[in-house]
Image (cartoon, rainbow, N blue to C red; front, side):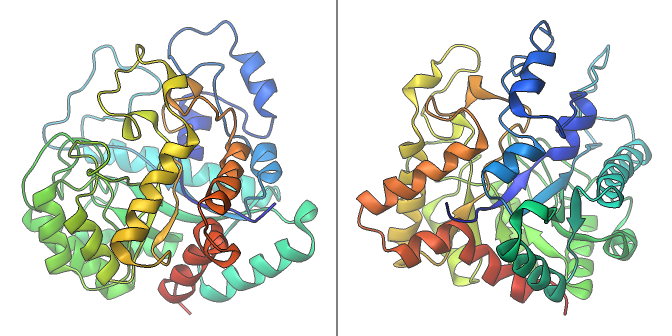
Length: 361
């Protein structure tokens, strides 16, 4: 089984907001949630720390996620899993709490926060030699930059270990327009990206609206990723990348992680209505293949599954029960004529190459 690097896992959100013990197995978590009905994803999770080890995941991007955009809807009454807060200080505090969760797990030996190229190399070598006794390596990412109170605070977060940031999630953040909206970066957003470039923060273009995407790539010249993004040519919708956006990302020698959220793989998906069996892991392979055909190489394709990102098997491909099933892609790509080296690149090599360049020395 090949190593797998996953560029988008909301581990802290799954643990803290859904109140899950991610140190338990997937079946154990499902059993604990068997009688819960507050969310469709209850008892349908696909990710836990034991399962990541079973899936041979040495490294992932683990997120910090909290929103406080200028026009976010504040649900009344709020729910434990809600991400929207009345003002940025609260979003900051929640993101700090998620960071504290990762730090505690690191102190207990369950994970290792990777901040530099040398740490990535040494961690990878340790996993290759002794995977059973090497903790999960995480690169800290932030999905939606509202917890950064002002652009000048980027340096503080950088010193905390944050290494990749998407300026916006759903709606409009303090810095950019995201999924379900459109518009350019705010003035603060332009300054935020300048701070990213100054310190070396990786820009994650995922969730940027079309106009904010164009604005961002014109402002920012540093390392870039699209951590969990699929193709608009295959599944229409502004959450997906256009072919022109893919070409821009390729021209920056960036990498796109394909997501396994079923509504991004199946046109006109309706949450709670569409049968997950109508979607297959092979549909995700189609998105990867589309990017490869546009780029003329496999160099820019990888995986950013977004599994358990607020959904479970009710909203994944029907042949995906846990994150370990991502390895079915190995057989799918081999049957399509992809070489072993190309499959290695998609599973881990392309992310390794990018982070070996983008992380600080």
